[in-house]
Length: 139
Image 1: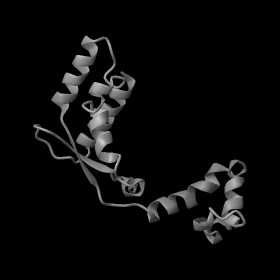
Image 2 (image 1 turned 180 degrees about the vertical axis):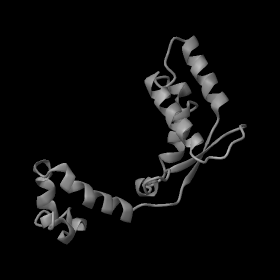
Image 3 (image 1 turned 30 degrees about the vertical axis):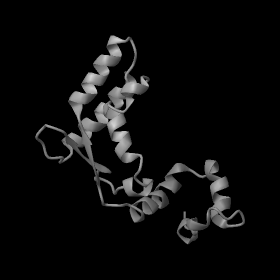
């Protein structure tokens, strides 16, 4: 517990380093010992810049209906994949560096706007987008 703050985890790629050796032993280290350093690293690397994502729900609904008419799933149908909510969000977030999507606790990695719908993303629209992503993946 007292050793973790002294370890330079930026050297994890160097095989000879203490950080690399500790990483190889990670399954033997209790999770409660890992939580504090893990939270410290996440908070120090958090990005507060949010990416703006625009989603067209009517387009996604039409894609889902077209796929259903053919007896297919919209996610598995290459013609409609880009038009699903998952596809629209993926096309925006795919080109963002993962480090820019890392956010502090209580923050959201992206802000969402549903095209043609009123609403300010104060958390509800973000939760709706995550629910829609899950629904697309589960269909």
